[in-house]
Image 1 (cartoon, rainbow, N blue to C red):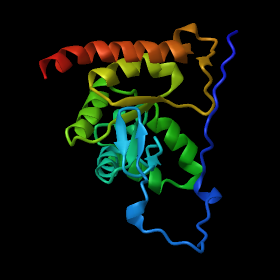
Image 2 (image 1 turned 60 degrees about the vertical axis):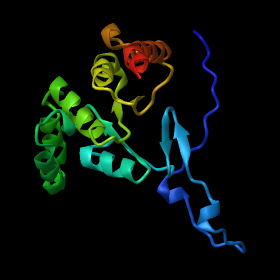
Image 3 (image 1 turned 90 degrees about the horizontal axis):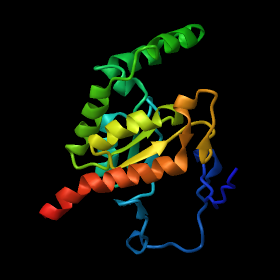
Image 4 (image 1 turned 90 degrees about the vertical axis):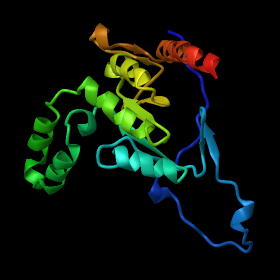
Length: 198
């Protein structure tokens, strides 16, 4: 098995950060918070999590307008239901003892390809950075649809993901390295005719 070696930068959660005043005060005009992520320039290094309770189409657009980034979960309620706000209200109002059964029921609904396209195009229509997430087992199928809808980037997200996603179901096995190369190649082929016309 090929050994995967890469150094990752540490990320911090909100409970790990404390703001402590120092002896020196810096004029905000002298501070550059911008960061580059792929072809996207963010004014502030804030990325909202790809969770149904955090990012919807409106949130992704608003964050992008403010120079940050929201990642839309393409396997959540946004792509399972035409009106996800009703579902989110239902989730928010459920009693603790009913939560598991309600969530299981909600996520029985299939992800709909047309809603994937609709949500991505809604974000793109506002010239907002459009980043979406998929799980390893559905990455190949959903990423193709996301690319066709012109998502700017695709995040493969799971609790634990390595360079190769191993599973007993060979149909859903994901080689992350091959997946990235294929996605980049397909994306560049799709972009070439548009680039030539400018």
